[in-house]
Amino acid sequence: MDQRTIGPYTVSAIGLGAMPMSMNGDRVYPDHDDAIATVHAALEAGVTFIDTADIYAPSWDTMGHNERIVRDALVTWGGSTDGILVATKGGITRTAEKDFGRDGSLAYLRSAVQKSLQNLGVDVIDLYQYHRPDRWLVYGEIIDNLKTLQSEGLIREIGISNASVEEIEIARQVLGDGGLASVQNEFSPRHPGSYGELRYCDEHGIAFLPWSPLGGTGGGARAVGERFGVFREIGEAHGVSPQQVVLAWELSLSPVVVPIPGARRAASIADSARAADLHLSADELARCAAAVNIEV
Ligand SMILES: NC(=O)c1ccc[n+]([C@@H]2O[C@H](COP(=O)([O-])OP(=O)(O)OC[C@H]3O[C@@H](n4cnc5c(N)ncnc54)[C@H](OP(=O)(O)O)[C@@H]3O)[C@@H](O)[C@H]2O)c1
Image (tube, rainbow, N blue to C red; front, side, top):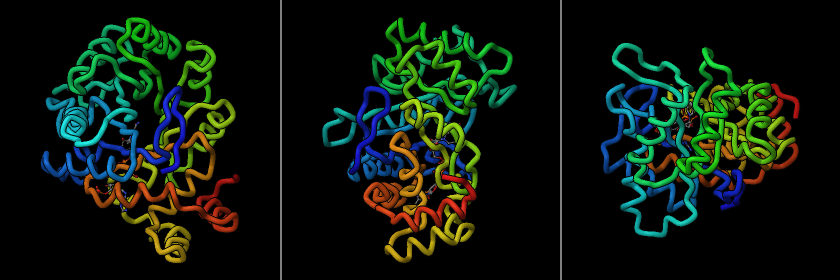
């Protein structure tokens, strides 16, 4: 599979979004063995980048569920795990009183990282992403907290998620040149709103990881070919799924783009991974951009 870079790491151009195996729109989850088989299908297809988060879990009191699936899949994988990058995230809280709060404080982030280390079964997290801004705190101070965790040796590379251009700029200022490895924002034909952040990352050589790149688990991903007929038509011309066309189009937008399509089923990620080898003509790419209504 084509390779791209995230900070110092070389990874497959298509990653695996592990979230749907623990949290998704219709709340139907694969059993543990099926979830492991899905991660293994990704690895078999050449995927070397897996995105997870501490909060990806069916309920507030099962946090770490998705990280543990990823850990178990890597432990039981027959091949080498060298060169597989697992990225997790923290900064969103889940409690009985409040599902999905925010906490960017140093004490909270340190305890979240320590739990993620345990769930993932590693000594250091290769890429730790700050999940979503805590609006009660100053963004630069939160990024400085991540820098502290890096200096303590708990995390190697730092990424941010759900960030505006202004927040990306703050993170770059705090972390210095080359210090920000990645930005993970929602981006798909259905939600192209982060195109400005994608362009900013392109300009500054920061990996841009589109989340929900197909339109999300609530049916958006499944129906992308119906909602955006151009992706279906181009897929038919190449004999591939509309989802592959969406991902190939996203890859074409910049060499910094690494989409992380989610999957519960092995067949989904096996199909999505093939998008890395799908090359669209200039005319096809222009038709995709027009359908999404962005100026490339
Ligand atoms: N940073 C954030 O705030 C944030 C928020 C949301 C998600 N994310 C990350 O982004 C990843 C992807 O987002 P997402 O899972 O929400 O949405 P998505 O990737 O747009 O869609 C996932 C859904 O698409 C289906 N699918 C995937 N490949 C397919 C294919 N080739 N053909 C047909 N269907 C296909 C899957 O079906 P099956 O389930 O049937 O396999 C899955 O339910 C997540 O896993 C997570 O890692 C991050």
